[in-house]
Length: 248
Ligand code: PGA
Image 1 (tube, rainbow, N blue to C red):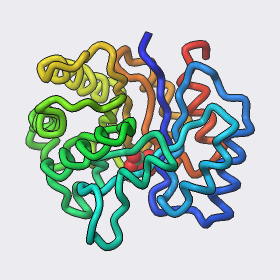
Image 2: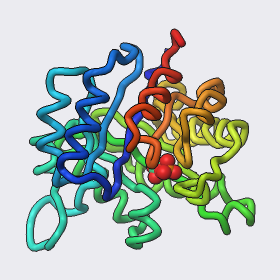
Image 3: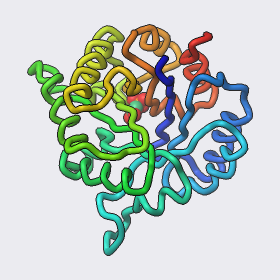
Image 4: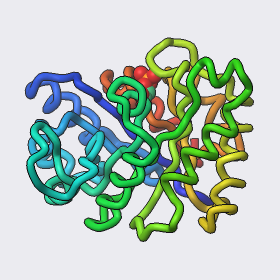
């Protein structure tokens, strides 16, 4: 049985007090044991949230790492710094790709840094609305996976987050059937790239809510969610985690 994973990407939200409160509410709840829960607060709150998750089974992730290891890169945060505080990082999130103009090659360099320091990676892939309209979704995702993962890397653990850009933060999720077909495509591509497609967790992201998630997790190729907006509300996020359990 593949691992189930629910990650919360807080993006550039939460004051310090809100971060404490959100993390404390999630970590003090009784969460299903068969779901890996990862909180990805802003870098600035990694240390404080780390202290809160530490006695629980909840894991900590960064939202990104720099493409370079060290040096004169004002405002960047190195994977070598992140590893002192967290076990995971998201790489290739669509906001990094499309708001900040990160190329596939940059995403690859970030994965290399994460692999060097032993961070687990949630690699986000997905097509834009135009690419979707042009029926290029599979080709785009294949290209993103190939440039990120070939030549092969010694990443400690990789999870693929399929996030169609047009579904992120829009309140307009993909249909579960469409996400399922893309997840199946991702597994085929992972096999082609020499990774064990059948055992790598593939999660869906894009306007996931407690209400919509149940239909996603019923799909055979989907193993969880990368949650943005709904992860800022402890109750909604915990409902998603509960729904992800095999024993639900
Ligand atoms: P959303 O964000 O759930 O707010 O759509 C998802 C994401 O960006 O990972």
